[in-house]
Length: 613
Image (cartoon, rainbow, N blue to C red; front, side, top):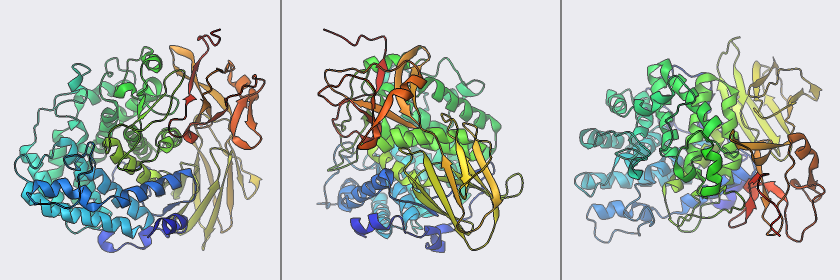
């Protein structure tokens, strides 16, 4: 499938669930999820329709598909002693081999090919697994293996998904062998992370506390005790228990932000496997701590890759660091945590972080290009910032970038079988151009949100079922309204909850959701109430950065929204009314629309002087 055909067909592909073979969907006896309230569609049945984020996913797919298999495999073949191994090393963080990203790429290919029925992507992943399997016996001993905890955890996840979603005949057996090696040989020091010395910010061995997630998934898919026993080794009570009884611990700062957000996905799977309510309490407390103490307006977190003190350090970081947010990696951890919490609680409020990260985090990232050139940090420095590429190629963020874009279609809709009233439920989490096939019902969502306020859902079906349609009401919103077939529908649309429409449905029915989009001020933290970003709906707006003018941002949400006026030729770009006309551009536009090295201002502080001469 070439690029033109792929881009043109994303909106028309039939759900892969109707296409894949039984070997791809029933690879083994799967242990049921015992604690799940809402289910995502598991990379099947949902299709993204044209939008900036669908195009981002398509362009990313093209990049990874275009990488040479020989280059990806070069380091492994060379480690076996193969003379003149074809290709060349990827370079950057993958100069020796592809361990940093290999497992993440396999996982992304397995999931994305399932979501879109992409035979070319599946073929590439099959080749990579098969060739790696050939190399493994000859590099499975001694220093040539160089497979540490970090790379093993990613590789196990990739092989597991190539078995589960890709139906690869060797993937699970290879995962078994590698896990047996890891269980027998891995360092089990498990030193918790600490803010000092620097080398301990991700523990020792590095990021060991992220291993349980995929091991518990392997246990659920295979039923093999080996995986659960090995997962249990890497539980992280030293950090998790800080959130066992509080959402405001006093000593959770100083550690590596991405991996410590990511470790709570392991706590989520511990809850799924054991049913211990303590884990769910830990998850919800950690989430609330993040939202209150660690999160920028964009949904990003981790200045200079660390969690910070709760005493105003986040606001202070804007003066100190331009490495504000490790974008692809941290978006990935946030997506997963929010999805797990939606699954286990059924609460709509957890979709808000997914939405913010989609539009202002990974969805606003520069595209990966060339020889692994990609974005690593986002810059929120007070006064003036820019988007820029990492100086290193093929870092960890080139692995999570692929995982993020493969996840997009899996975050739009959720489902629930036989809710409290016995009726099935379809949940709309994201207002994004898309379609979903579910229980004989097809829903097509048409919208220009978040630049426009309305999303229209149109149904087609052969029978006339009764089911509940739940619509996420964003926590920041006010005045959300619903129409069914053009008529106002009375439903409780409380911010942070679901608005529910339950009725007998028939083909041609439409539901129209209107989410008023108003500008508002978003303070960085409690200690800096006047250090604010501007948001319109879920989207953070930044100001084009002229060198002679600093806007005087209005002091209240009402005044701000009243004075922000859209440009005549672009309704998504605004200016503050009555500001002096300057020669340089000084409009406000969505952060996701800024390109490489285009300067912008995101945070403003009214206490700073605006006139220097």
